[in-house]
Image (cartoon, rainbow, N blue to C red; front, side):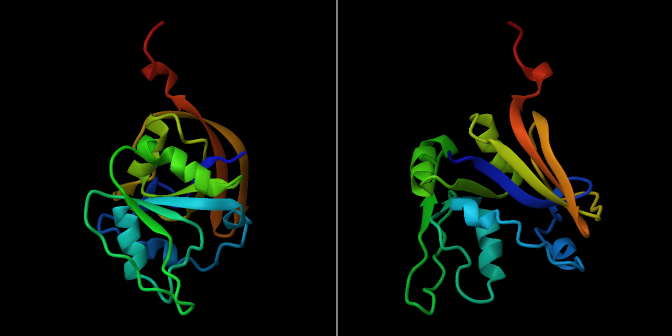
Length: 186
């Protein structure tokens, strides 16, 4: 059964990018994260416009994802160039609520996972609709003080797994739902 998973790197104080949308704090880590097999289980991806534009600005070669990709945006964005094989990447620009496109995204995954790449508010939109199953974080030993938050929502989570891979602490959580104290009284 497919899951919707927000899989991302974060700083110790909970930011995925600095105030200028830079990931220099992540890119300068001395150890490259090992292949944990997550990507092999992904059947489709979804990202926000800011993440998409960051990927395009930092491409060193063709579009890096072979699976269908949704970009949630209200802006007009361009597609990357075709790869050396001549194929145009399967990128779908989408407007509206994530729930408007969720069925199509999940259908495209087959029996694999839907990866919410970013940003944090996009992951929060999935959580708001009850569509976010898990959060996997790779926490770097960096404190930014401000920037783009990991997940600007109030959620209860269940810790499923924790580990490390120098210099990262890796945690996998199941999304339980909104904070219990935020739920309406019955």
